[in-house]
Image 1 (cartoon, rainbow, N blue to C red):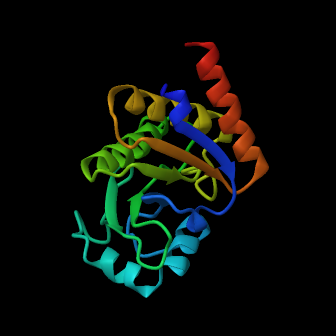
Image 2 (cartoon, one colour; image 1 turned 90 degrees about the vertical axis):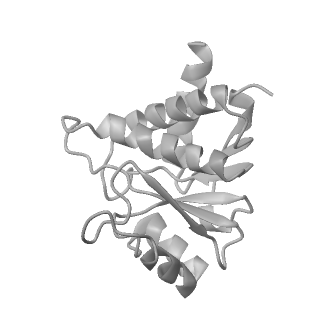
Length: 182
């Protein structure tokens, strides 16, 4: 199976997917928030907050710095695990946002591989309230995912789950461009 054949784009609710792990677009506290983060915490149940509180702080109030990833059980989610990653807030592209966003995908996939996770699902990290430009984010995510899959057997399958049609379209266009460019 080629790298691209291991990537699937679907529209729907990431919290309902039956995969080994879903990636939560979290904030640095890991204690819940809005958007995908809030939906993941609501569906997983209160045990998720407890598990997140148990993650050691690297500095006061920060359990997961931007670009990094942490793993917890999925609790009431259909997914066995939640990989929490903190995307960058868009500041015009002059503060290393592209590299930090790529690191979110790379570190989440690395963590999945380390834990023998076969299937993983991502939402569009940083494309909501963090205002990362959608087309740019789609290109970065596809690049990071394809780079990882080209050198690693795990995860075997990557799901890109778009809550909105425009996100699915952006990912599809970025994946098609990747195919066209080799």
